[in-house]
Length: 156
Image 1 (tube, one colour):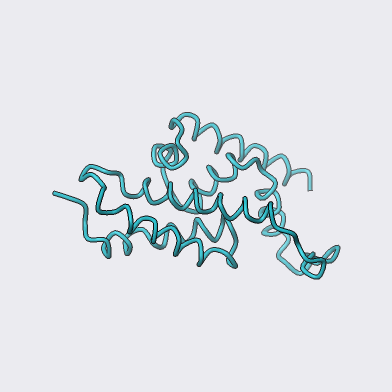
Image 2 (cartoon, helix red, strand yellow):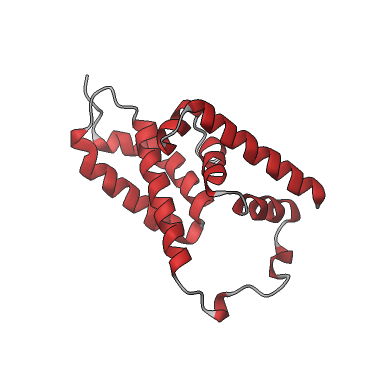
């Protein structure tokens, strides 16, 4: 049996991919990143083997598209008017603000492993496939991220 029709594949994986992208790049860029992810998947879909792990494959594409967004942000200038004022996050829920701020401060590899684990709900084998690493390295990245988050949130 070959790969399912692309529409079925899209319906099966879209929610998990979108959750990951919102958590990874934020709601402002998530929709564009989502479209780019599935356009790239559509172009490559006819070349997939029947035994391909479609979930890990599409999450790899989403992970790379998220990295592209982060790289583009790093290269671009930020208008002074867009910078938040000191204390502007005070209106956000304290726990949520602290968690997301701490997660944004993680090393890129740890942040993406954490997002793939909890936002995309992938197991360690799929995280490893998406990140091009071993399952043990994926588990270690998630573990290190959680330890750092706990330390930072306990200090607050």
